[in-house]
Length: 437
Ligand code: ASP
Ligand code: MG
Image 1 (tube, rainbow, N blue to C red):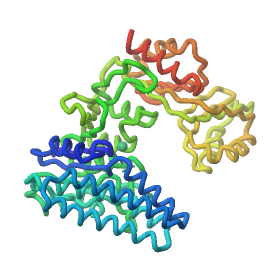
Image 2: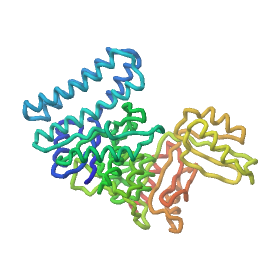
Image 3: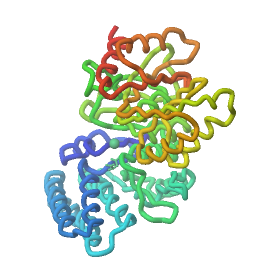
Image 4: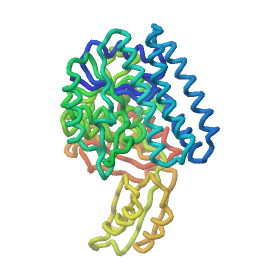
């Protein structure tokens, strides 16, 4: 059994839903769907109005959204029977959203509102497949997807509940389920964060020991550089989980970074595929390394670097701990670290507590901050005994000022910090030196 996940744009219109249906019928797989594109954003906007105690503003968006769905329904189903059925079902979700315009609105209600997008898209697809004569069954994510008290997914619970559901509906031709939504440790409706449907797919794949997890989007796999900045990028056919994790974290939008770990731990290959060109091979992500190859480049924006220089660091123990502790105190993750005998530089992307952090760091040394920086991350087989790879990367950037270089943290990447203003030039230079030579 495979797990196939389709994102918002892949189910973004009645026609796109029909295209997805063509791709999924015929195999007894589990299909994870996001909300139709734009819907979660509209639900966020509705919540925003309700937080601001403006029910009229909320109602306006609710009505517009409901109207849009009426149109989708008319286009998706061919029989009046199913149009009617779908309209009745979708109306219950909108009625539910409307109940929140009359009462106190808190984080708890917001989560319920945000969950409706996936509930609607999956109900629509399930009914559509049934209209086609397919014995499609909905697996309600709210009955099996759960997080624990640390807001981390609870794999044991997921596995148990999902197995029960699959056992109960073992005659189904296909299973449809909601991405993104879950219950938390207290049984309340919650979610796996924006873009979390990829995570759902990976958790479901791990729970059922799927033969493969497929993430379907609108681009032909993971590209070797960012097509918005570089011409002639090409899809990467194979990636190691760690290469994919670096790329996903450092800016490649195609895959949510949380999605990698459950698949990696359970050794389930993840395949990135394109709904617009379903025959294309896409990208396969697995525990295998392709020897001797640099695979891809990605960039992460809005980075701030902080340098702490201190004579006291010399031969001292505990210096780095004290520095890191300050970032921990302000719940600010560090991305890159480079050290010298008399100083350490780190980067962060969350500037919320920058001022306090800098203030606290001044106890330990002289602090310098560089803003509007970009981490450029090069991934591939960068095992340290290979020779020449680091040299090629650095050589590519010979015309560009580089603020930090980090290498040797894993076998799979070199990260470089440059100014945002140099990002495009850096990405282009890396592509032309590493891939187009
Ligand atoms: N619908 C959710 C979002 O827009 C989850 C997802 O698409 O993965 O963030
Ligand atoms: Mg997504």
